Length: 523
Ligand code: SAH
Image (cartoon, rainbow, N blue to C red; front, side, top):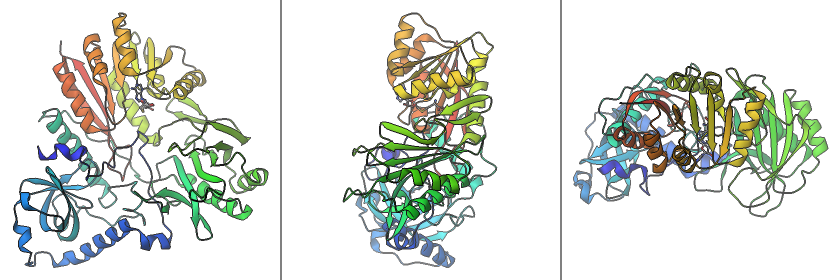
């Protein structure tokens, strides 16, 4: 019961409540910021705690408060907790007097002393003050801004143990939300090199004194953390961002200041095509004009021989979206050529594309195996984005129908179908939970339905329509094991059984885990 609030609790920051893109990366930080940020101080404490841990086993004196029952625990109390597992947001989870305690930075099997920072009816949040018993899985996080930038949550674990923890998160979710004790879980597919995998960076530009920095705002602050050397980012992307910063500095092109509303450059976006090594650059300004754009183009081309597009996007408003509506290509190609397996894409600067192509191929291969196509099937690809899964499956199916909410993504999906020569896939704009029930109402009966919803999972009318249409196979691609398990519970009650669940590590060093699950009809 206690942990039901885990995903919803106000105090327990739902960091993983992000989009499918795997969120933001981590990276390197300027020294001034390094010293100042409270989250950094917390990491400092953790390091101290790690030093102190040599004293493990020594008898410690605690305040009387620590012996209090969970009901009387107050903020500031010191408690000792044995960590049982990694939670869905990457934190250590243990129990204090049968109440769940979430402790950032703590690892399974560790015994930690911690200070209670939040008391909720169902759980506690606490901060490590000392590690009494250290896990052999603990390692020094390689990234200098780990714990500040917030993009990664598991860099303090060896990669092997990150993979184990992700399998455990999935098992735990199915136990809790689908009441399934025995899950046919396949071993997670990890990466041989779990670094440098992200093919795109979208970094805010700002100043640190005289220097231009490119990074992310630290959680809940206006402090820009420079992450232009982020170790999970592709090195070509890091290099491109660095060169753009230097070019802007050299030409004295001003960066936008949110407070004074002066300056121009707001965001630098760099994407590398894994097939070609080409770089697509987009400079997003808060102004109509990109100052000195001709010289900037020349300078960037000189510094980045692999650049294929230099685009300018205008985003004047205050909306939290990164891109504005108007994009102009200043120099080069309209689109970046990319491929996944045999499927080819032509990506406009704003088009969504999977961030970890190597792992995406493994995921889509699992989807293809799950779909078990013979060439005669009608496949529905619900939540199809730019059509990637549908296009992957189209050569093996009779017909593919994709459903996607965002109109631009639907247009991209149609373009992608053209550029890869697929003529048996149609893409429809709309809500999966409206369109599929409509189709089923009109007598359309898909043989295979693929769903790949956002973190919130599928809407109930969609699940009901699937149960009614009875496709032989349902392939559920999910980036959130909790909503996956909840939806599976509904589907189990609606005549499906789970054949297997294949986890894929799309975002090493973070707590995110992606699954491809095959559900088949029981009758
Ligand atoms: N399958 C794609 C993208 C999945 S991301 C891929 O593998 O690349 C999830 C997609 O669902 C997003 O493109 C989002 O715009 C879309 N979406 C969100 N809610 C939706 C809804 N209710 N109906 C249809 N699409 C939706």
